[in-house]
Length: 302
Image 1 (cartoon, rainbow, N blue to C red):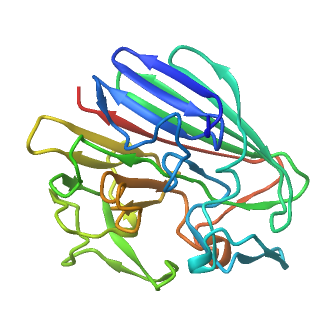
Image 2 (image 1 turned 90 degrees about the vertical axis):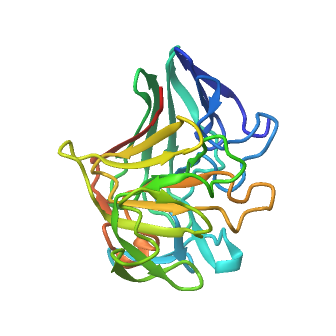
C-alpha cells in the first residue's frame, strides 16, 4: 500500500485509519458518514491530507533560516513557490508504539540532517471516544542542543456534500495574515468588516480561503472551536484546538487537482504562522530535554 501499514481504531460507530507513512490520519468515519475528505488505502496521500506538519507547518521562504547565529538551508519541497513546506516527516515511516482497540500511538525520531540541527522524539496519539477524535502531539528534544520547533496537522473536513460551498462555517480567528504571491505573511489585519470574518456562522459560498487566522476567540476552557454545518441535514462537526495552537489555516482547496477541489475544507491547527523558522514569530525554542505537547480534535454530530 502506498501509505504503508494501516492501523485501524474503533469506538462505537466511529472508525479511523492511521498510516505508517507520515504517521497521518487517512480516514475517519462516524455513524457511517465520512468526517474527513481522506484518501483510499490504495492511494498515495495528496494535498497533505491528514499529515502531521513537523517540525514546522506551512511554507518557509527559500528554505532558509538562522538559529543561534548559524545559517541553515533546507531542501525546497514546493518548487513553484521556492519554499520548504510542511516539515520533514510527511513521507517517512512511523512506528505504531502502542495500539489498542480505540487508540494508536505513532512514533518517529527525527535526527539531524542537512538544514536541520535537532534530534526530536515525535509522538502522536490518535484516540476515539464518546466525544469524537482526540489527537495529542508531542515532541521531545532528545539531542544535546536547543532547536527551533513548530507543529501542525492538515485534516480536510467534509459533511458529505459534493463541494463545501453550501456549508455554514463559524471560525474563531479575529485576525488574518496577508500573504504575498508565494504564501509568505507580509502583514496581519483584523477580520472585522472583511469577507474573511467568519466569527458568526455564514455560508462558505464562493469564498476562496487559503489564509492563516490568529487571535483565536476561545471559550472559558481555553479551547478554540471551528464549526461546520450542513443546513440541508442535521449534520455538523466541530474541530477544536487547545492553547498550544495559536493559528488555524483555512484552505478551500481551490489550487488542488480538479477531482479534489473544494471537496473538503482543510482546517489546520498550527502552533506558529507560515515562515516562522525565518521570522521567529511564535517559534518554539525546545531546549535539550524539553517537550512540546498540543491537542486538537474533531467532534462529529451524534
